[in-house]
Every structure is written in C-alpha cells, then in structure tokens.
Length: 233
Image (tube, rainbow, N blue to C red):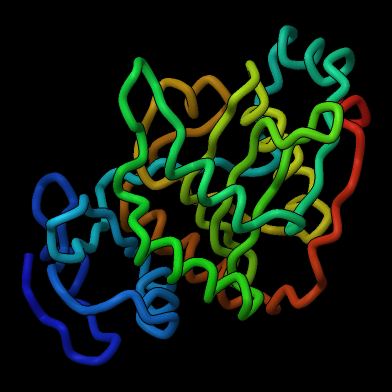
C-alpha cells in the first residue's frame, strides 16, 4: 500500500494490502476516477478519512447472462406493478443510496457529499448511469455505477420496498445484455449478491476480463430503458 498521488497514477495492484487497500490520497476528479476504474481500482472511505483506493483479491463480479432470478423474484416481477427506467433520476438515486438505512443505522455513510458530486460529474460526462424502480410513480429502488467500454462498475443500490433493488438489477442486466456488456464489477462479496448469481474470481483474472471489456467499442448509445418489470419475468 502506498500514498502516491501523482496525477492519475496508481501503484501496481500487487502492492495492495491483504484486505485490498492500495493507495491513500489524491482526489475525486473525473480523470482520476476513470483512470482508477480502468485499472480495477475504486474509492471507498468514511467521512473524516483520506480518500482510500481499493483493489481486493478476490473480486466479486456478475456476468450479465448468469443473473439468477429466483421463483419468488420472478413472481415479484410479474405482480408487483414495478416500472424500470434508466438515467431519469440519477441525483435522486445516489441520494437515496446515501441515506438508505438497515437495522436503524445509516448503511452508506461512505457516499459523502464529495462522492455524490464526483459521480454526478461522471453522469454529466456520460460515464455514470442509474437504474430506477418505480411503483405507482414513486421511486422505490435503484442503483448506480460507472460504465466504461463493456464493463459496468456497480457502486450502490437501495430499496424502500421489498425486492425493489433486485428489480433494478434485473433492469440493469437487461440493458447490459442489449449493449453486449461483458461484466458487472460488484467489488466486494455479499450473500445478497451471491444469491443473484455473482461470484468471486482472482484479481488477476478480473484484470484480464477488465482489459478485454474496456477495450471493446465504447458504448455511446444513450441508456433509454423504460419497461414494466413483468417483461423481465
């Protein structure tokens, strides 16, 4: 682990600590964030800490074609009157992700004001995207992340109605399959993600997938998904 902060430069991934911490410092400029993602590095830190850059080994990923839709989720898609859109409420989605709570505690304190501003800038540049789940015209779930080439780097999701974030993920996968994306980077492991088909792969295997994906043709097609969840069942 190092404290290098030269413009958009990061140390070799092998220098990461056992838990994946690679570097400390720098900023959240769009140029630095994009340089980090292209190398398989992401920022994650709490208020009061310096910016921490991570590249864990193993890495949790989801191949779009391997999304696992359970019988209960399929039933939810069919009967819960959800509607899915993309890039219609990015700012609201990131705020909801930051303010979402679990067991009475704030779950995403790492989404600081600076982080929100940084990803809003990436959204304006066409790199960051959101998926929204609506129910009776109310935003009830969603997710956001960064797309480079054929790789989607998932950042966070939220749900205020049961399974609404899973519905958003199903919508994301539908969009990525249309655009022939290779991989979703889920960053860190969780039983929730594994239940949906995610898996852990060695960091160097992830880097190989990453290079193949980001070097594919740049996806400049606007994200304009607007479908009823039942269409994904």
